[in-house]
Image 1: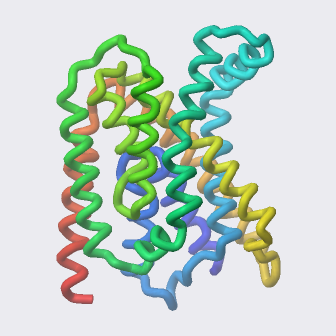
Image 2 (image 1 turned 180 degrees about the vertical axis):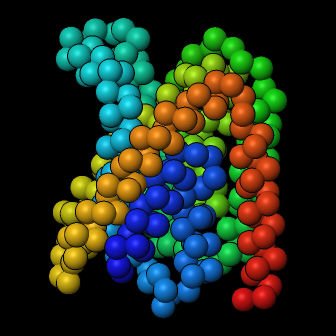
Length: 264
């Protein structure tokens, strides 16, 4: 992997992690179009670095919220921030269970099945279209909502199902305020990402052999900067009900992926 490959993958990860278009789906489509000889399958270390970069960008954007949450937790008071933290924990459970017990089954979907990715992108488009037509409310995310949104996040582990698209759409369809839905969606994934990074580090699956740290660093910077832009932009778009444009985009890419699969 050279510097250009790292930048391209970093930009893709940075933008698509937050925009409701499926980062995993785009990476799978990108690898299929460019071919394994042009862009070899990124190492686990590089994948971890890219996800760490986008998780870090989330911490930067929501730094005030995160500080308030931790401050409230250590005060041992049952206030709004403490309740929010509990909802985040509950929302993680479905994805954790799927990741622990169905890891091999999930990996089987990441074998370049572009037709499947295309179909899942169309599912994402449908969710976004329905959420875009929903009226905005002032309703906060409840504990029940958090569990349902967590299930949506677990389903989004499939390539082509956008994590942010699925979680934000589900939250909005449950009647939650759109800005609060976006905030909850972006914060709920941060513990999962850091947990996955810790798991990979402790398991010894990450190899440092033949690692070009310059290439890794370039990918990290690209993903981090694009993540900052996409996260901030997405909050504004959800608030203004602009999800229909991403819905149309997902349909077009999904159909193109399905058609391409017949000729590959």
